[in-house]
Length: 99
Length: 205
Image (cartoon, rainbow over all chains, first blue to last red):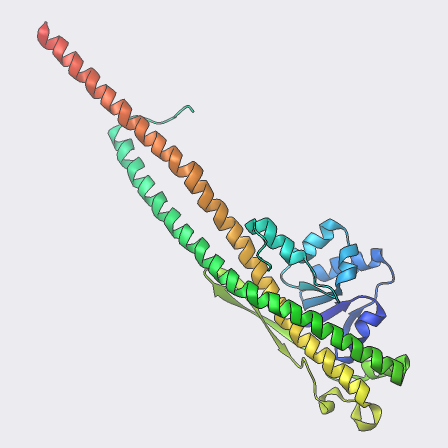
């Protein structure tokens, strides 16, 4: 299975340098949503890396779909920590254990 | 609440057996919930560390690529990126934690050596190598974090479902069955009293 990276060129360039070939540079938010929806059903992709800032811009429904997906796993990375999993834990267990 | 049950002795025996079975199931589910929660807590502390490490590695990698771009030029970095020969791959297998099937992600060619990268000594530069190495390390952290994140998500779903089942058994199913049991017992006692009274009246005549 492949690793896919979605984001701006400055975000994906480093991954390309590390050998990742499945690079997607959508020019706007609509196309990014479309690309992410396609990746959700792609059986060849194991992990999708996305800029955490871009992930926050996505509609709530899509964000929930992405965070619920296991294969592929969508991982938001950025200079700030992504709090989606923390929120999921809070709603499922009722206590904030992320401390 | 209207009880739609036949107040017979056989129904009472059946109900007692079902209550016992349900209580056994309830105890087992409680053990499963606690076990899952224990696994979850262990993984969560590892995940918190992994996420923090991921942020730090990303910052370092970003600095390395920015340095390479500013020294070598954006075009040189892009052409080097296109020339990379080997691409990282992930293998997803499955393993079991207390009945929950969780993915196990293993990576291949995540961080590459100078030869594997295929740029050659003349084509590359120390800054490009440094950036590629940093991103290789970042991809290793990503694979680790992705495995943990999907495991945690699956465990969370299972914990939530088990918690609901335990609560339903504890607060709805078992109390209703116990209520039905006491209703049958009362009804049978009453029927017995009626029968004794009828016999007494019959004897007096």
